[in-house]
Length: 139
Image (tube, rainbow, N blue to C red):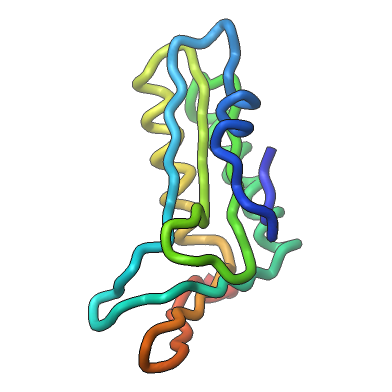
């Protein structure tokens, strides 16, 4: 399962979907909206994505993960819309027979989502709203 969604990310549901009885490891990464940036207090974040392109890139990342590691399942979900501090913005979960593959595949997944997916964020702070530079589509 790979997608962008406006819905709350349910980590328990994703855990249940990535779980496989043949696997001895599940590794996940959960990204949260934090309450500050380098300069000021953050009240929330608005995520905007080019959904079709993000989902195509996520499919490519998924293929790359399956080609490079011996894993059973890969799930990547990124939230869009307005999120409050503490909410889950992104989750990647991987199951495999052994932990090494699961850790490496999960790390590769989140790093490539952050580098390659056209997802932008606008931070709401006490001083206003600021778009944070993200991925450039032509990269």
